[in-house]
Image (cartoon, rainbow, N blue to C red; front, side):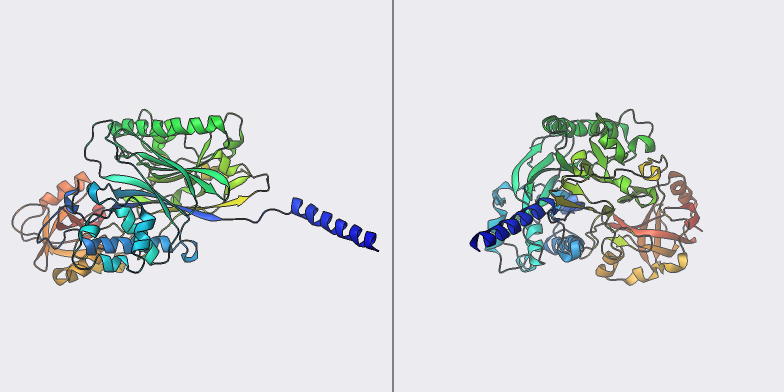
Amino acid sequence: MRRFLAALLALALARCLALADVTPAQDRPFTVMTYNVENLFDVDRVSKFDDYAEKPNDPNAYGPPKLLQKLAGIGRVLKSVAGGAGPDIVILCELEIDFTPESKVPDIARFLAEHRGTSARQMLSGDLTDSTRGVPSEAWLLKHLSDIGLHGYLAVVGEDFPDPAGRDDIAHKNVILSRFPVLSSATHRTAGARGVVEAVLDVHGQRVHVFANHWKSGASNAAAEETRVGNASVLRRRLDDLLRANPNAEVIIGGDLNSHYNQNQRYPHLRRTGIQDVLGSQGIKPALARPGGPALYNLWHELPPERRLSDEFDGEWGTLMHLIVSRGMLDGTGVEFIDGSFSPLILPGTNAQPPLNLPWRWTSHGPGAGTSDHFPLVASFNLSMTRKTRDLAQPDALAANPAAALKVGYPSLDRSRLRNAAFLAKASPDAIAQAIGELFVVDAVVPQGRPFEVTVGGRRFALHSFDRDLKESLRAWKPGDNVRFVGELGTYKGRLQFVIHDPAWRN
């Protein structure tokens, strides 16, 4: 009997082991976000930008209340992801470099622990102390995220090196937030732009290299493109080192490359582009499986061209923000990109202004409002230790790189959906701040004095247009003329202004 029972036990154990060999490991999904938060500055008022420097008696000056507004907006965006849990990896651009080194926070975990019983709102209310005045922007962000229940982030902060090109006006750094252990990190110096931050993460036992980028601005400018070629070269050299050691290394590249996914096609006057010609970003997914083929895949190609948008300038949608993955994220093993999970994160009323849902840019007017001039991008990944064959087939339409820019729908806009600007004449600073970026029907009078101004209910507004011909035609307006147009409310050098985007909007 004992032998019989032992045999049964051995048989059951063998069956369990066999099942364990064929049962897939449990999936472990996680989410990655990349986000240019548009000037998340600290409050020491030591800044390379005049808008964030000391301005006594200026009601629009940046300070603790504005920082709280910024943090609240960013927090709402992050908390909208993963059912309120927030992304597990966040690749951030445009956090201010700390220009008061005596107030650095070398241990953010300790900073958070010391202030566990006090919220960021309480710390930033009233007079600042010597210990809070110079707290860097990333520490304030992590404190606020902790306050709203987004815990567990480690911060990899870009180092502030002297610029190899000699620029002394770089105000921003890149930061990576991770809920996964950080095995190592480095900042790779780039000429004329922010350093590329690399974090090597332990994602459920897999080594994942994450790169945060913010390349030189001026997407269509040929001289700026030469700088971006240099920015891309720094990243490409590091990638080549990784891929020589492991052709299927798992890499995520994110950030503001100040380049469109179709940079070559959109700006044919550029001799060579950083993103396509040097970095090797491309959109043909099956090519990753070709021996000697490309190593990178730009996730913009997961969407049809009309949904590829992260920013807007001069009436055109752009794709300056990017999430790019290596072939190792699509090879059927380890950490894998989840098909269909990539998208810009557009939240009307939070980071987008209806009715066209343009990015709700940050403004320091009044109490401050808005979030950022870029939409964040999100994508989900999974870990399964069981190798599977991936179908890399892709419809041709999704691999397209159209030459024409996607236009914002100004001409087809229904004016009946817009408010009249008359209420702005006596609106409070808070109401005006909330209206920055909104489109209005404007009934105005052309005043005496400088051109490109109108008055609405006695309140003066500057005028601007990115269309040179349209801007010149405004000179024909004479003092005393009653005019009507559709304009976007904004600010320029502290003054309120209307931006006219389309000639059809002017009567």
